[in-house]
Image 1 (cartoon, rainbow, N blue to C red):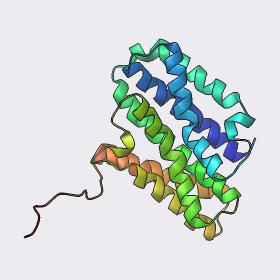
Image 2: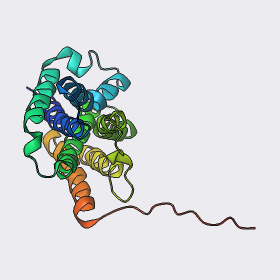
Image 3: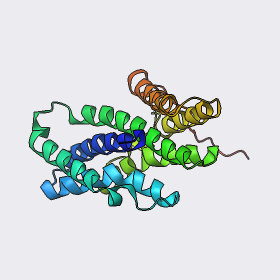
Length: 207
């Protein structure tokens, strides 16, 4: 099994867990859990594959991804009540999923010899869109748009670091590790230390 496939499997598993946790907050039934878990798990990767014209889409060619996401949904359905703070688990699992998925998207684009711009965009797309779909469908404030936290910029920075590492001649493992570690470190720093970018503040119009 290739390193990219392992990243996709890890991304699917962790994102599915976050989707199921959001489903538990919405008090959905087991089918709802499975739907949200699968949507979250494969959403970003699906958009990535469609944009890169990769056929078949990764989970269509290998349905095990859907089975893994569904199994994660079942697990959370029967155990979520044991978790003291589901939101805390959600944001931290999501941070790991973001880093893994950003690396998976970056690696997929690099393997196709795409330009640096496309590589970065695929890292951001794969890392962010599944969680965005999850939160929008479940009527939650999307983590990707939550004010005062780094999110998209984490995936962007990780993917950009991977592009630089690739151009410097680092091997695939080091390149994707740099992407995941930088992405996660920034997201964790935002959650723990409140790191953020300046936000727009409205001002009265000048006359």
